[in-house]
Image (cartoon, rainbow, N blue to C red):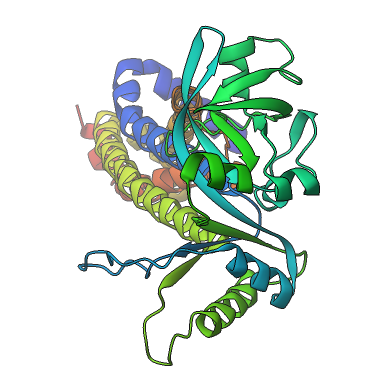
Length: 403
């Protein structure tokens, strides 16, 4: 009985193909928009999390200067960090995987006739651990090179491509600002960050070398602290703040003259923001489903009116109201499900295209797909019920007289 009803529904849809297509359009657009928005949003969220993770796992970033407050200009007086600051943190702070001080400056690097504007960072071997950098070739700095300020450097993939093409840079000498520098390592490529920064256009050298021969001072711009496995970054942040306040003699109730940023919290905040935006866009797109449902109700009312005589004949030869009700409900549901399935296919196609153009992961969600198809079928049932009920309640005598 149900199979025959479904067959009749398909026959009715084929009989009025253009009208059925126009009716489906609202459902197709609604489902496609919801699937595309949520899929793109999920990919964007993962891309944000991945970009933040590239900065280092369980990472805290300590900078000199009071934390920025909304509506107030940054303080002009900044007490920079010194080597002593780094030494005290390494001695007193527990639950740490790696601590590294770093200073950075934009310089011009030269090799032969080629030149490149790049960011040179003075740091030590712990920097690679704290920031989750790995070496593709070569080695990191030794303790003696770090302490002695040796003219050695580690280059990123962009620097390698600019100066050496696909060749091996290890053992080559490049000029960083005015310093001849021996290349001892090549970093694994990280690509562009979510903010459009080329993370591979970098050169690392020992901090002492940078301070003496490029910066001309012994300041440390930033201190990176990576939490050990199982240690909460929130706990570690409290420890850093306590040590820094004591070291810098900051009285209780006085604002800190340094800031500590938790990259884990930043990643969670940004991911949460993109998730909220995705939900809002999905909700707006879902309005199209309601519009499509109204279209289905309209077309089913027209269908009942057109087939009044057919309904009368069926009722006259013994069909019950429930049979007529079921027939029109099934027809409305089949129409909605066809639109839902077509919408899923179009939505996934659009999401795949957008993901490729935006360079974000393509992450379709099976639960969302099933929910969209199920919701489209539910809309068919809800908006098809009233027209179906009207058809089922027709007086057979009146229906048979209808022309």
